[in-house]
Amino acid sequence: MPTRDVWRLRRAGSLDRLSRETEELEAPRSGHARVAVGAVGLNFADLAACLGLYSATPPGAFVPGLEFAGTVEAVGEGAAAVAPGDRVIGLTRFGGYATRVNADARYLHPLPAGWSVAEGAAFPVQAITAWYGISELGACKAGDTVLVQSAAGGVGLNALAILERLGARVVAAVGHHSKVAFLVDHAGLERRQIVVRDRGTFGSQLDEVLRVNRMSGFDLVLDAVAGPFFDPAYRRLRPGGRIVIYGAADLMPSGTRTNWLKLAARYLARPRVDPIQMVSANKSVMGFNLIWLWEQADRLPRAYAGLAPHITRPPHIGRRFAFAEAPAALRYLQSGGSIGKVVLEV
Ligand SMILES: NC(=O)c1ccc[n+]([C@@H]2O[C@H](COP(=O)([O-])OP(=O)(O)OC[C@H]3O[C@@H](n4cnc5c(N)ncnc54)[C@H](OP(=O)(O)O)[C@@H]3O)[C@@H](O)[C@H]2O)c1
Image (tube, rainbow, N blue to C red; front, side):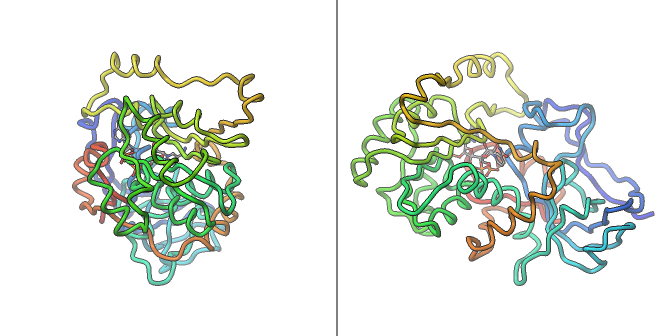
């Protein structure tokens, strides 16, 4: 029986509980394929799961990780779509922080020609998230004005690429000045399109960026930060405007353990909207979490097909860590300073 290494948490709640373990891996069961993992993509959700803040986390011990790329080693009965030797991108509902994975073959996708395994592992979760928010829920069209929160992050850069192809007019918000030069030099934005978020004055920052760019408000806001930044953006939606909310990074604790008191205070101060007022204001708020669509595997080909025209280059990998450095990689992602994707290389 082949062996593998995994990063496992006996119990969610602290990054310090992550431990590396070696174990045997049984043969892939029906409809599954064994993949030798070359790289693992990190997601903000991994952090939330490790810290006990993610409702989709399995109870008890679990291996984090939602995406990977590598080479198929063996296939179970009925997994005819893949064959040993295929280079694939994979989605998994947890279990991705592993050097080998038995994956449901419906969630494997060919690695695009010319892409490295690290680029493949960096792709599906964040690209599908951006596409789903912009196209499926956001119904974005050419000329729409769009505010993208965390624009230099993994989802954010995918969103910028899709919005550029769609011909939308973009305002990008980031949490730190260190990300501005990257957005100008590598994402093709002009400085006047970028806001470095300030907790106390975000509303007037948005007014200024709208004025400078001759925009009257936003048709679409992509927000995974929430907290005090939601309401100022909601107020600046144009009639017919939509906020698509898919995360709450503002609740992310800064330490390796969760400070529940501080978290509770922020949670109690979370944004609220009045649905009756939404009718007269002609504004919509939509939320999603793709992991709850996991069972709907037949939606995945549509997502890859929807994304295909927008993907002109591989995702930007901001930083690579060795598989052995998973805890350090998660702490780096947690710092809020990362740009693009963070990957583990096996
Ligand atoms: N609903 C879904 O299905 C789904 C799927 C994938 C991702 N997401 C969400 O989308 C967001 C982006 O995900 P990602 O994986 O691409 O991550 P990312 O954007 O690469 O990194 C997260 C970013 O959150 C921002 N942030 C705001 N407050 C923070 C805080 N208190 N601590 C740390 N970072 C903070 C930081 O950027 P700035 O400070 O520059 O804003 C940070 O870089 C996350 O909130 C994630 O949970 C949702």
